[in-house]
Image (cartoon, rainbow, N blue to C red):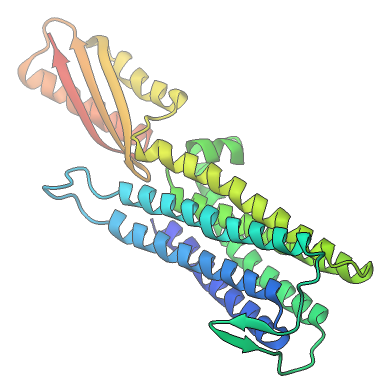
Length: 319
């Protein structure tokens, strides 16, 4: 929990600083592209706020209304982030890039309407150098946030013995860190694409490169947003542990000499790193009363020791 919160706070400060830098660039140049990027960073900053709200609610203790706790709140708010990432940042970037591209790439600099006012740049700064300075500064801030998120994900990969980022993406229940890492990755790639686009536009005196960069960024945002939404959907619906992880927990039960067989075995995530296990177990004849209670307690403790995410175990003896 503490690691996830640190990752989100780092991303929040980075995105907030980047939004301010881009807005200053817009004020100096009146560039519509920089205004669009400002909206993008504001959207990312808002997303981090949603993740922090999810962490706060997800950390609440179980009560009568929510006997398994509020852990799934993090899944819900991370899902909202994926929707906003798709619907605001991705779609607006794609639409803006398409608009400029279809108008010959001529929308750059000059007067612009902002909040009902017609705005002219006050200073005669060169649009290209202002944008390069802002993008390079943004890369520095975003790299810092990415480093924090990547360190936390690597810690989880080592702790769970995951083979790589693809396995971690498929198996992790810490959607907060996953979302922050994905956003930081997209943001870094987007900044690089934007830098390449405006540089090519300058070198070849062809503004269509800038518009094409906006199109690529928008499409990339939407693709990653869909992937994030899919990952959160599986957890909101109550996905079980991956087969290999569940098999280890089943083996703890079946390896006991007091157990004849497992009648039913179920696992489900009720929050990041919060697993509930329920098993119907048929025990060998002769085990009952106090002996059976002690055996069940031992099995529960073994499961929790084998997987630190297991918080609650229900074992029902079958006759």
